[in-house]
Image (tube, rainbow over all chains, first blue to last red; front, side, top):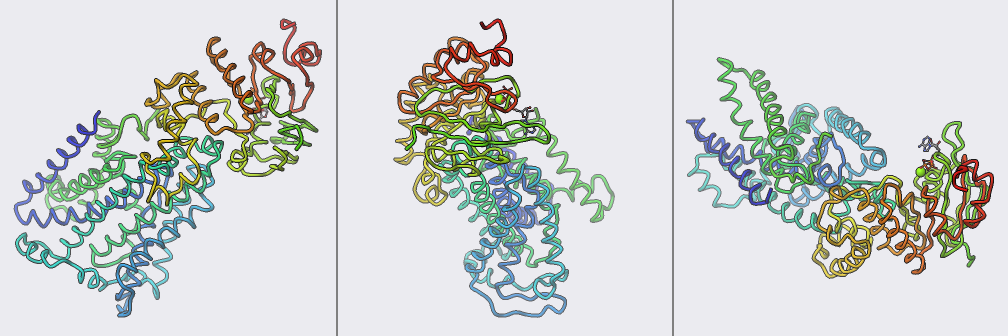
Length: 351
Length: 256
Ligand SMILES: Nc1ncnc2c1ncn2[C@@H]1O[C@H](COP(=O)(O)OP(=O)(O)OP(=O)(O)O)[C@@H](O)[C@H]1O
Ligand SMILES: [Mg+2]
């Protein structure tokens, strides 16, 4: 299959799913659309990070949510915010971009700390260690209320981010009748997606990217040829982790609040779903996968109401789960390499 | 510097109760084709694994080109110039033939993240040079026509050739080949043997594990016979053929 054909399939799927939002929703479809695009951009970034781990290097990381969380908490706690039960206000803070940079570094260091002991071991051990450390992260954040706000979370931190919003978005938001705050998060996230695509295109076609792929294929052969497979894996792990960190930071700005429950294992599961949908190993895959995923998620309310008369939150969540499952199964049957994946590089082949 | 490229002293390894390798003293001369033969399970592959750092030894000293490399990490041993292949070919399946070799040829500096981010893409000058060397090697092993195929599309024999190309582009000091002729047809076997002969002429020492006895007898300058982890004989082809211990443990009577 050619690249052109792949892109056409991906694009038509997206046009179809976004079109159906406008068809299915009479009231405020544009608001739903912007909401979708914000989440889709943010999750795409996270899936891009995971794809570096799994698609490029073959590392099985089931704790991706924690990398997002570490970035989010580090950055948000470094800018002005209010945290905890009393919502004690902290007006001091670092400049936004410095705080973001530190957040990304923190995620990478977290990746290094987890990776150092685990990455020497076989793949499944890394899977176990990442699940465990992701849950440990969540429990520690919940426990350290003085620092992280615990279960009460962190609020009132969005101002510094909204302060840098370009003026023209305000007119645009009025015209589209959408929240200007979310419009900015969506715009910013997609700028980041585009930057990452350029970065990754460069890295994928570089000697370093080639070395990661070699590690994915056969670590022993990599070692026998004199290359340090462990260090390559650690670098991949850190890069993917800090990209996840960026996604976590944007997720916090999108919600306008930072809650530890945002980083449950379900989040990791969703990111995996997106990566598999889009096509493991491809650069544009996570992006297509994320839009498609969120189009489905946004339409679950409608679909749930077809099944239940007055669907409550739990029922909608149930339908949502089911939908994601059905979506993955359908795709695995129709296009086992994902929307954008190459058949020759199929990573999930069941022999 | 000693004329031995490789010197082994008291190398031991057991798996549970099983003594896989137990070698008191073994030296390999520089610039020779030396074959390591012996029955299945004699410990030949384990011996390779031990000296290349893929398996941790229980005890022993390995001196390679004057340096003590016991307990050194495998990739560092390879960088010193001792490069191996595997009994079960390990090509990078979902990479092209080109990429398989370029990865091997690329220097550590060229592979660096920072370098890849700011300077070197696969279109850079360094990579163009690698590309030329790669093409030479591909022509040498007759795989040029397959250069853009994914490695997993190659036949078993072609994979052996790819593995050979991938190690030889590094210009190692010694090449450890684990059954380079296994599953290879007679014509290709001859080609591989003549390649091995050219390698030696270029100053590369060869240590080879192989069950194809007629080939071993023909090309080897020296043969070492391993049985149950220990060296039971060494010598020239004729000496080995005449050795009764070797005949009863490995060669069998029909080979006389
Ligand atoms: N990882 C391991 N764990 C346990 N036992 C092992 C391991 N590797 C090898 N052995 C045992 O060590 C012995 C030597 O095995 P090795 O693979 O070195 O034999 P070989 O001489 O290469 O045989 P072949 O000619 O069949 O390749 C065998 O009895 C084998 O079962
Ligand atoms: Mg063997």
